[in-house]
Length: 336
Image (cartoon, rainbow, N blue to C red; front, top):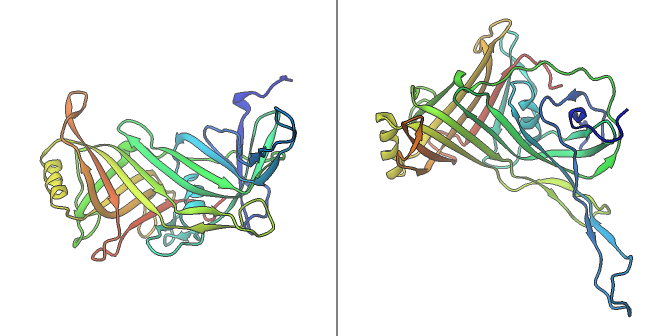
């Protein structure tokens, strides 16, 4: 037996809470790089003058809090669902006709908050395990580039971190990666139909960052941890790298004129066991309305080809009745 914790024996397990803040056993294993939860409780040694030049052993804890930031790891059609459930909206999967695919719609709120799901998170190694309850996602980022997998990072916050133990007997779930080369980009007019005009032979890289607007709200309510999860408004930003061509040049003209655009980012995966009414493949889709807030000149390059760096800020458009809608199709009839 090793005398210290071993990096390769780290693990994170997740459980969906029935009642927010009531810890539950884990039901699934996180597939990706794992780190330990962070105990972020506040410690204060008060200033005082008691006839000593040194501090004395007096300290108090006015606030308990915890967090865990999942490092960049390959995004999959199965486990991105936990991030969406805990950061955007909790949904009931809807079967796509008689197909084996289940459709999950996650509209990022442009008005009041959606109902989200809280989690109990277990993290540790072969020596120590800590547990966070009432965990939710404050931000996440989906990034990808040609010839690679899409990568996912997420930051979670929770009530407190306490010493615990791993829920035993869980099976490592089967997952399938989201690959950039299987993705497509569409850009359309706000008065048109989103997903009509594919931007072919142009898209090299993307980064979609969602700040969920969820925050830990502390009040005088009898506990040192936060009282509830509040909502202060979500934000979504898309960064793109596009080859410099006639299509990109035309979009740069629309940036100059402050013209709103519709963007669809479509990622397809494995063929479903049985095709449904609408979907025949695993799918992640991001539909966004907004404006280009920056559109760089073609001064970047990709192996000698000129590239524009673009930033698109998602914003609600009344004509399109859209802010940022995320959709996931996989073969899970229920979130594990």
